[in-house]
Length: 594
Image: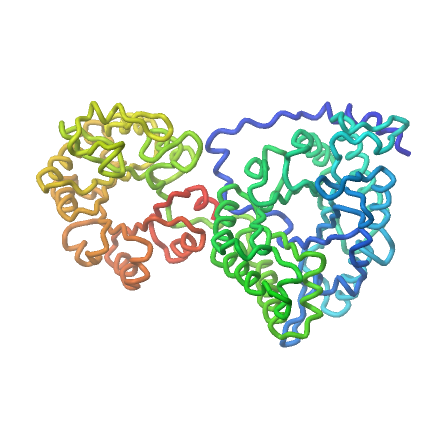
């Protein structure tokens, strides 16, 4: 029955394995949390004899949730079945045992997965039973199946069609895995489940230390079968930030926060922001230690996950995988402590609500994004660099913000601080400053060089005039800036911001009419700015919260509202929801993905 497997490698070799070479724009335009057709994926550890049987009754709290008020609704729309060991000493993945599973053990694992009345069969039965009570769900339950790892160097796995597999050879690792994929698909189709659809496969290894060269060819084979390939690397695992290049359709970010009390809650914020930057989904993690009555309970750490996923917009924007240990949702379901049911009610409501507000295509945003000091938070770039300007333009930013100083010889240079490598920007000649290096190896740019490069781009230029040592120097700087911008024919593309009241008034006095001129400080209200002649305000994010009427004042006065520096998804979403015109951020790709 496996005769055709001798041709598997021929099939794979005919599939193009080269990766598409993306432009900078293509690399980043699809950023933001990743959304898959599976919104909420429950991890089911099944197969080993040390696991529960996974009967229909044991699946109930994963399939539906009954709230305190008696209402019952469907819960997870996806289930990932995976296993690492057989519970008897054999390993299906690296780092779990010195004894590697062989072909017969892989077949045993297949038998366990498709055993009647358990695992997949029981899940299908559970859905059928619940359907009789609450009606047909508005979605099809999707199944993802884990793939055993072809343990490098193993030579006693067994044979395929008379050929002994040697896992020191990549072609044999691929051949055995393709055989297993086909066996999973054959058995799944033969089972004829009523309510389950096979969506794809899961790469069991949580890093690429041992099998880094296998994921791409396997991805091509999986895609040829019209299935998806997913991955859940551990926190900062080797290759996590290159998941797409490795051939995966979606990767979920593991925060790995729950398990150690020494890991601060900030890890959750970092994980969410990393996922949004890398276009990954998120994993929510807990186990039986989250029970309120558990010894040294980690209940509050589960609460922290839910709190941060809400604040960081993960529930609103991201596909989410749910790790719950061996059977965490079942443990919570069986608990007699009301606190456990309270937290499950909260989590279930978020999951159920996501089915209506998690959208594959984000709505068009009124708010436009400005890259703070350029798009510097990426390879090959630096703050206030020409590379940062070009990269900000390449990802579709509305504008790029940059800082300008007047040097000792009355030249205009870009730098944020008033000092660089021990040199005062105001008291040093431009020739010396020009020789200083930025973090990406560029020389500190002059404004003229910056504007010359910008002329070839489309991005708007948000020029911040830094407060200088005297009003006279600020006036001189404003005059030189406006003169140069005019000479470069960029007047219509440049907007001006400053913390200096004097520089603000000088721009208002000297710039062409209708030039956007905004104030960065928090000490002047919108009404006062309007009287001065400014066109808008560029306030700190928290200024809008401390002065809740200011945003509406700006709208009523038909003035521009800009906000700085907003780097978290929840704060960005607040700005979008409240109709702020412009948002300045160090993470423009995160904003683009919202």
